[in-house]
Amino acid sequence: MATGSARYVRYILVAFFVLAVFYFVSNSADVTGTLRTTPPTTTTQNAAGGSSTNSASPNAGKITTDYDPAQYSMPLTHTDPGWNDLTGIRDGPRMNATFVTLARNSDVWEIAKSIRHVEDRFNRRYNYDWVFLNDQPFDDLFKNVTASLVSGKTHYGLIPKEHWSFPEWIDKDKAEKVRQDMKERKIIYGDSISYRHMCRFESGFFFRQELMLNYEWYWRVEPSVELFCDIHYDPFRFMHENKKKYSFVLSLYEYIETIPTLWDSVKKFIKNHPEHVAAGNSMGFLSDDGGDSYNRCHFWSNFEIGNLNWLRSKAYIDYFESLDRDGGFFYERWGDAPVHSIAAGIMLHKEEIHFFNDIAYYHVPFTHCPTGQELRTQLKCHCNPDDNFDWKGYSCTSKYYEVNNRDKPEGWEQESKD
Ligand SMILES: Nc1nc2c(ncn2[C@@H]2O[C@H](COP(=O)(O)OP(=O)(O)OP(=O)(O)O)[C@@H](O)[C@H]2O)c(=O)[nH]1
Ligand SMILES: [Mg+2]
Image (cartoon, rainbow, N blue to C red; front, side, top):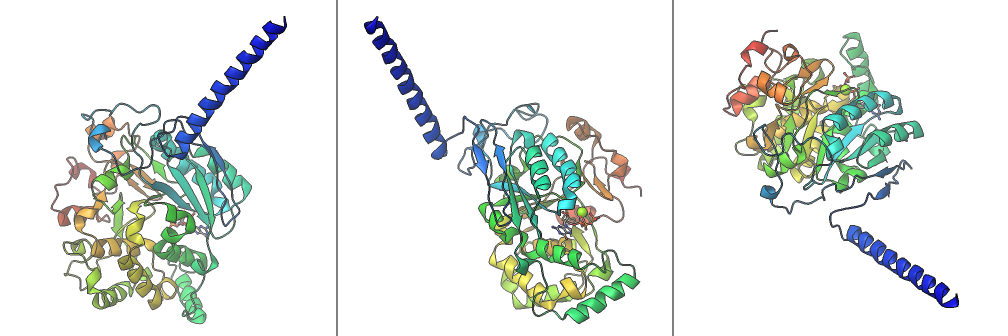
């Protein structure tokens, strides 16, 4: 009997030893950054005191740019391998990328809808992170709802006061008079202080927030936006492999009342910093007279996929600081859309700006529904092509095609009627 017990004790000890070895091997694999096989649990603490606990999915690809593209298919068209593989977690590399949303606590249910669209059409297979930024601390409801919907990790950041306030060189009385005047003239958001802080923040600071410094790529998402088609490949990876820096889905003309002196400010910057102007840029998209005046065309910045290192470059920072000194964020109502677009148009090579025809998108009141019935069917789109804004009179997307000497997608004429 005593010998029998000793044998059982030996079995138990051996079992413990095997389990311990297994545990050690699987955990050290995670630390060294090899492909994950078990879902890690992460907790994020930040300036806002926010924290979220979330599980990344098993076998999510590792973040790397050191991979052989031929080894992992990126199905750009329905004839490419892997096109129909829309289930499970997508194997292969991940870019160092995040979604980013600026929002108030009161935006929680509207951003919840946007997240649902992004997850259902794309991110459930890729599990990219999501950074939320706010000028006030995020509350528990906001954090809990968003963390439950995002398949990647969520992070919550509090914007420092100096990125969301009047800079010392701004004359507040003058700014107040401007707001009063714009209110009387019924200019949209003309009397709003917070809207101006928002536009200045998106123009010059979101990419420099502490949490954003961890990433190279961003995809901006606003409350209540919709995605109408499946996304069959990783747009971040597309941007990386095709050397793109900035992208858009909708473009239009800016209200001149909000930017009367923006172009003067841009011309001053160009004069002071000719070294930042790219050869082969998209000036033709911005100006119809070789740069003398602004034609008001801009990419709509509530959707953007872009490169954060470009925004953090000396060229972009010099540009933003020059504009910021001129005061138009407060003495007028400069939007981050024309500010980003002019920067991209002047300081990037035109090949670095990409139009995602296959990402179908809505932000009130405009829709981008991919041109071409065959493509819409392949992408399982649920948008009405009659709503597509691209070829209507108030869109600048035709101009983008002209500047890039590209033929417009087949079927555009049918969608051009206002
Ligand atoms: N934290 C915070 N976020 C804001 C504030 N104002 C706007 N935002 C966010 O900034 C982004 C742009 O604001 P919107 O109000 O959508 O501006 P818009 O897209 O020009 O106008 P809409 O037609 O109203 O959508 C959104 O993601 C908002 O949630 C603010 O005061 N605080
Ligand atoms: Mg919006």
